[in-house]
Image (cartoon, rainbow, N blue to C red; front, side, top):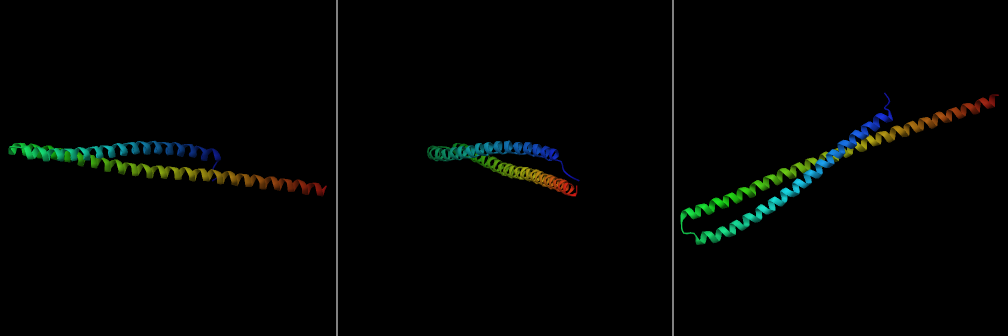
Amino acid sequence: MTLRPRTIRAAIAARTSLRDAAAATEARAQAEARAAHEALVHAAAELDLAVGAANERMARSGSVAELLRIAEELEGERALARDAAAVRATAAAALDDAISNLRSRERQLRTVERALDVLLEHRATGAARDEQRLTDDLGARRRES
């Protein structure tokens, strides 16, 4: 079965669309990973500030209830920092998947483009061979006449 150039060009168009979609997904994943990283940095800074403020508040506190409230607020800040770290890890994993998918789509596109090049080269070689054969046949007929 011989592939037609039109079929391969349609495959190239489809692979190009898939590659473009993967590139858009990768760009979105990069933006999300960057935002998650910034959120983590912000949460870590907030936690550091809360720890510093808690030290001062604990020194000034006069009751156990106040100390428990401070501990509760610190635990809330720690939970926010843990959540931000989890979101960042998820975003980093999604970015890695998107990059891998984009590489795969680009490789698939190059493979189909290479198949078209090979097909066109094979057809051109065959056409040149057929033309040479016709030229040789015409030359042989002229000599026979």
